[in-house]
Length: 412
Ligand SMILES: [Zn+2]
Image (cartoon, rainbow, N blue to C red):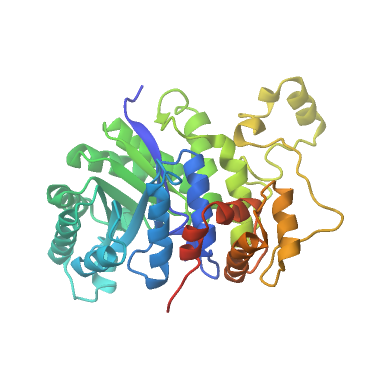
């Protein structure tokens, strides 16, 4: 049994929102952080500290962390590994505690992205200076990302990671940026990296060749077999650039139930899969992307049986045709769909309908004036989302109006 553990770092609010043609309102990103925290996820990469329209959202979410709403989850920013970006990040978001610094390490990118402006030594120098600068701000954890690690020459990757460790990095993120690795290659490469560098390894994998869950858990196995912890990067519903990242629920299921992992490799025990259904449904609504019918665990057909032999077998003993229970994912409750009159809170709502919406959730306002304050925020939230707010969002705004107001504020 491996003594080290597998932790989850969800990157929906960073890589997920880089999905072409799609995005999330800042309130939706906040809700994702809240649901990830409820699910016991170790860390949420919650956004881009250098990007101006993220500033209020990021600072407001750090306030939520301070008052215990977003705790114990770690909220981490993603920036490029340059001194300039570190300085901007801390000037805009001074209370940042966790940060990932990213720079390309493959020959392909060093030659064809940096166009001769930086060579291999230049990449190491830039990264080391950025790590030291971030350390000088009293940051708690620094992850150093080797972008395109899977296409990086092994000897350079080792030199890069050792230099990062020496400069003060806490973790190395092995980025399979193009989904180039397969489960066998990533296992060997990550095991070697972990063995020689002796730092915990993050696995950041993409699905361009359809292997993202397999590469993520094989990479994690490589790290654990070498005697360090592994941190798998996930996104809700596998959202992410091009073919996407590793789906959060699928990764958890694969670690818990696949042959050879089950009882041998351990997941962070705080993970609570019973929130998987709720967060998958929420992200699907927020991104406006349906959950595929055959999605592991949360798809409409994930527990559906129709052929005679399978239905009969599942009814006799669910283990005949199901590896895990739907209840574990938070499924099985009937969903209430309103079929009669509906009052929806929208950007042009009035106070009467609005109070009715909240009364249905058993939230009462002292008077119309109090209700109007919250109504105004809900109107703005509706403009940002461009679709009706869900109950959890309405409750959040009523409970934390000041912070909600900050999240909704943008000053271009
Ligand atoms: Zn990525």
